[in-house]
Length: 297
Ligand code: A3P
Picture 1: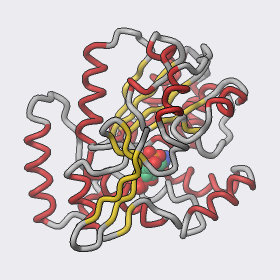
Picture 2: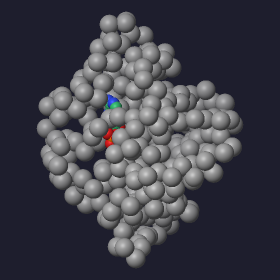
Picture 3: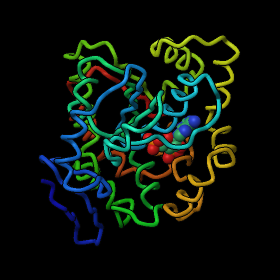
């Protein structure tokens, strides 16, 4: 069973989460978490299911949008993904194929059949400084948020791993471990900064991983439709009215809170020199055994 946890400090920064088996999750995960996670384990997976997995704010919606266009052969925007985390399995079972399902959980929480090689999985990661800024600014835009407080307070919690979905570093190493040990062949690893650097190249690789065939002009069209500039300009006009209503309810800004800046290195506009030095020390220490180098600009 999960317990509701409220972390707070002397400056009034507060994080409300649900804790299950030692890890913190967002409060909106239904019920006691245990039942939901157990039913996810048993969920029936279809051959053409696509899963998009990430630590929050790493580009989940971006990869989902690209994958949905590649899977359906249609460059229409379909809004936000259905998350395994927040939807009952009965509901997920009724969704038409091809399903594109997202999650911020790690591999061990995915349906057993995925872990046996069924369906396709994209894992996307992003440098932890831009993730921190994106997550904090996102939480501040929500009408009801699990965190309240300052950027300074948020960063302290984030660096201590007191965060929904746990520490960024733990998540990174969970996936590094899967890279080394899992041989199912149905996972493709993507990096936000690489997508920014060469979107067309990554989209082409994603299509071949999914096993879908599209001509160059469609892949170019997907690339154009999935640049930040195009998405931010058109997505709200093109998604379903009911989804627009939902967005207006959850976001203070009354617009899709996901699409903010879409840049590499925006952290420089938020971290103070002292915060950056402290973060760099933590990063060096935590990543000392990893060969992976994130790009921060
Ligand atoms: P910023 O807040 O830094 O702008 P997620 O979907 O995992 O919640 O991630 C949201 C982040 O991905 C946001 O980052 C958002 O702007 C960024 N993003 C979404 N679509 C993008 C795109 N087409 N190009 C670049 N970044 C994108």
